[in-house]
Amino acid sequence: MSDLSLGCAFTGHRKIEDSHLGKIEPLVMRAIEYAYGEGCRKFYTGGALGFDTVAAKAVILFRLRHPDAELHIIVPCAEQSAAWSAEECRMYDYLLGEANSVSVLEDGYTADCMKRRNAELVRLGDIIIAYMGRERSGAGQTVRMARRAGKRVYNLYPRLNSTT
Image (cartoon, rainbow, N blue to C red):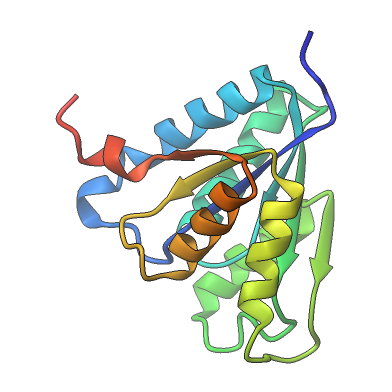
């Protein structure tokens, strides 16, 4: 029987490649289904643009069929969205409002707030769902931390590049 106290964390790039648009949402939903089947009920994102937003929206949709699934957003700093467009801020506010919890790690930006957010995602996630195509990135850093911690990491990026 699955351990229903497991967590699933998402990490990924802020820019979704054009060739991945339209394919990424169904793949994320399948990844959520897999994690749920493994016992994950808590799903964690960093609240950033791009993959974090895709993942958070997918968890919200998933909750319509599985109300025991929870969305938790770990925000690196309160001013994360300060330079975002009005449309991006509206989506961000919607996601924060739909989350079961929102944790803000710092009031203002610090040199290490993003790394601290990434470490918190790794700490909370037993399964890590990634969208990582570049090793030298925040997503790459998070994946490296997760692998060092012995977490199960599933990178969706290569699958999106395959022809199948």
